[in-house]
Length: 230
Image 1 (cartoon, rainbow, N blue to C red):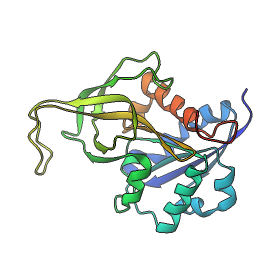
Image 2: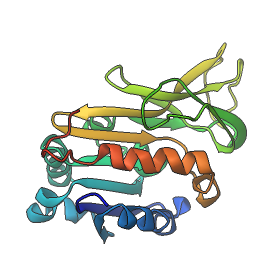
Image 3: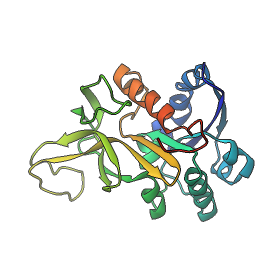
Image 4: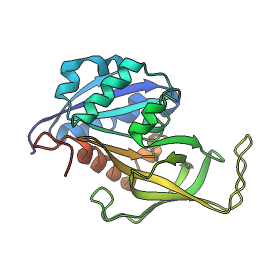
């Protein structure tokens, strides 16, 4: 078993993404892989200097809500120093909509999920260790249309059909749109992992989805040498 590492789970926000049940489902994996896990239902944990300094990984599941400037700066500083930051679906890319600096940290932001629960695919586009051995994942769930930037290492994508514009509000007429669905990112010494799948427990129980997220949590964690690169 690898040397013990510290994982800080931060959960809350909109109840529709079942943050308690969703994060609870990953606790046995973390614990069996040598993580000492602490669970928090307040963003104030980001202000606890000792906790952040000792954290090798932050798993955040907090949809929408607000983060204060002090909380964000403390989170950013922890990741910059080598603490991993990871999450799935709205718990990481539909959080803190009023704080644009947070979108820079994550490398992406939820924009829409046209049609609600729809049939679609997640298509692996990389040979990265997080997605190794996985090709396509068929889903009937929310398909996240996200805005991202070029600093991300995109591991998988999803494609919206041509002509789809029914967002329930004014939306674009498109030929076809392919957007990232799984990516990693660096933030100084820190590693960031994002998966846009995982709307509900049913999605998180799909073996390929769970495998990608579990691998992503481990990958994002602080390196044994104390850094986030490599």
